[in-house]
Length: 31
Image 1 (tube, rainbow, N blue to C red):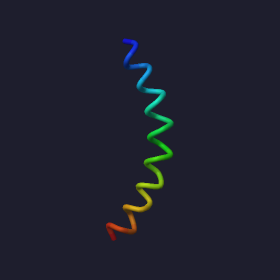
Image 2: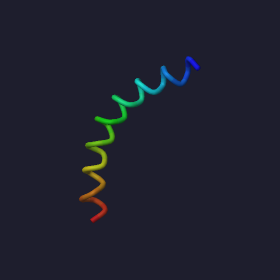
Image 3: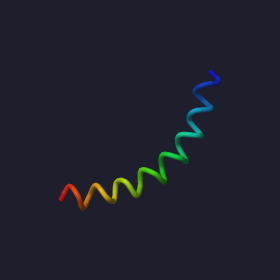
Image 4: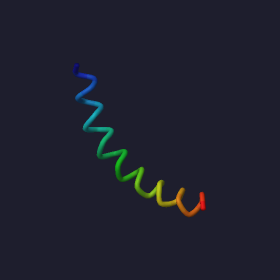
């Protein structure tokens, strides 16, 4: 129970800003 709530808030803010720029790069690259 302690592993889930601790991994959620840490993975959300870290994955959001890191996934945004990565997705923008994949869009023009995939086209």
